[in-house]
Length: 200
Length: 176
Length: 201
Image 1 (cartoon, one colour):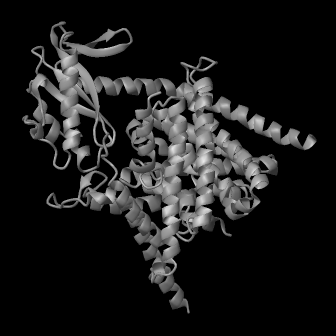
Image 2: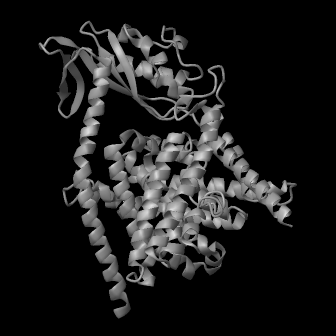
Image 3: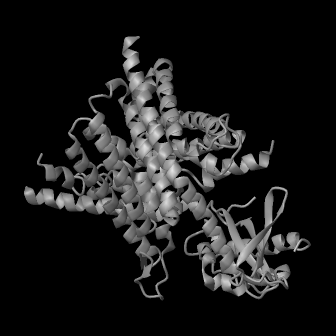
């Protein structure tokens, strides 16, 4: 097991190429759910779980059904990956929704509409596609999915913390709400730029 | 049970129709895509070795190591090889042309994801032109004591290109 | 609503990016150059119009229980068609846009319009709605891309328009530039909206 590659993937997806701040994936929930720390953390946990499971399932589907070299069909079906991936993600999210509804009803209520919206979170489909593009093997894909989710949660929680403080600041009327959130995100992106160029 | 049949049937029918249409479009476009890929690779080879008319790949079991370039009357006009090294953000891939005397004829950077305005300028002739005529065995960036001028603010990218060329050349030298 | 208004509402009044805050991921990622902006806008508009038309045609056949998976299937099919067509006919644009082409399928604008409009309205109106929203989306990306390209590189569509002595503000084409640009633009729009409101009062 090549732990150094895995370590690089983890640091890469959380800090250097953070999915929200550097790759622009997962912005809608980032702006929508990051108003309070609790819901941010809850959403983050759900996303980590979905992204890890999605990476696993989509890698398996790609390797055994779509990729000509390894599939059981032996023909090139890679053009079906968008459809296959998004459908499996949709099914996965439905399943997670049912589980959360039964196991943690307060969390279910707190997340509200944002839970089914994880299906359309570009980060979930994005990480599945990126795993394929980078030719990661099974373990690397799962680790990348989890790390990407952690990166998303990190930035989400940071944003929620800042926004809670912003409630008490003097923000000009026209900048209240989304405009100032984007500016804050820009400052965070500037800070995270410092991570790029990290070499091991 | 009945309430599940109709939705499932509708989903299945849409799946099948979608699959059929996509397969048709795929049949149309797949050959074009493969052709485009070959064309760009060929174009890059021509760019670094303009006198060559056709290229002969020299492989080793499954991978192509380099190409020999021949003119119309089958004289050897040079070699072409590709090299890649991780720069600042991602891999930087370069195609290098060599004269029969194993000096660099020209290079072209075909793929990079470096910082726009800094490392991304590695594709520009201002940077790549200086490699022509140099000995690939002995190229280093100025910061490492050589005579390759690095890009402003992009030493790592410049070093990636230079070192990739030198190291790959040294690996292939015996086969050329 | 009169038919023509279905088309124009998407451009300014209900602009998907600036007013409804949908489709933010591709907007910020692709706005590094005006060429990418136009390419993405065109691709997304094509998918939006086709899927709106198709869903409007099928709206009475799709059972409500499975409508979201059906919408996703239809949208994903058109996205795959666009993906393959772009790779075959415009490979450089396909390479620049990268994974954001398949990501059109999770562009909230397309699923949003399918759910909110196409599944409840006729084919012609759905087509107009799709065209308007798509155009609004493309215009939004183009505005941001123009600012970022001029400040960050000094060119418009690769034609240099600022003097060579201008040292480009590289941060504009990096991620922070995207966030700050859209934040300032939204703030500007709010100022304009508030002025209009106070005039009306």
